[in-house]
Amino acid sequence: MICLLLALFAHLFPAAGSGVQERTFLAVKPDGVQRRLVGEVVRRFETKGFKLVALKLVQASEELLREHYAELRERPFFSRLIKYMGSGPVVAMVWQGLDVVRVSRALIGATDPADALPGTIRGDFCIEVGKNVIHGSDSVESARREIALWFRPEELLCWEDGAEHWLYE
Ligand code: ADP
Image 1 (tube, rainbow, N blue to C red):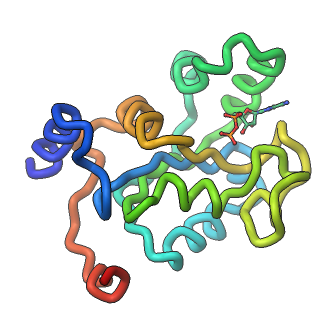
Image 2 (image 1 turned 30 degrees about the vertical axis):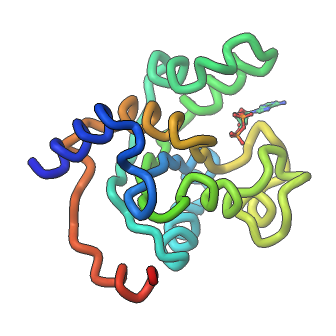
């Protein structure tokens, strides 16, 4: 109930959901699931200190993927991307914390793994842009749209974070 109210509040007042309440949408792509990288990805966000709000294994429909990547529909690789993302289950997640959208992109690394720095997920675990293991929202606005697309409000759990006191000043 509280989560539903928070979701409604964030929808009505766009500034809400910022600061420690900021959320991002992440997905371990089908290659990441097949290559048993789910635990490694979760570990990196968990040990960083971010808070897991939702997680599920999903076989995404073509309709969902076309909507998710709507901005890229004119790109030459679009149909390949939709096929790749639908080629097996993905692990869809919502993570929360201060600057989580921007910091997650840094932890993930550049879109093309050849440009991704060692120490980032894409820098450490993949080679080609068409098999780059993980998705992360690129802005707070995209995060809101993607979370609403992949999750029902009641799937986002509110829970007391006992570590928050040790993570934030
Ligand atoms: P990001 O995932 O880093 O936000 P984009 O939004 O630009 O990057 O692209 C979405 C996804 O499309 C990429 O993660 C990658 O899987 C795929 N992609 C991007 N560029 C190419 C390309 N040139 N060839 C094949 N796939 C691509």
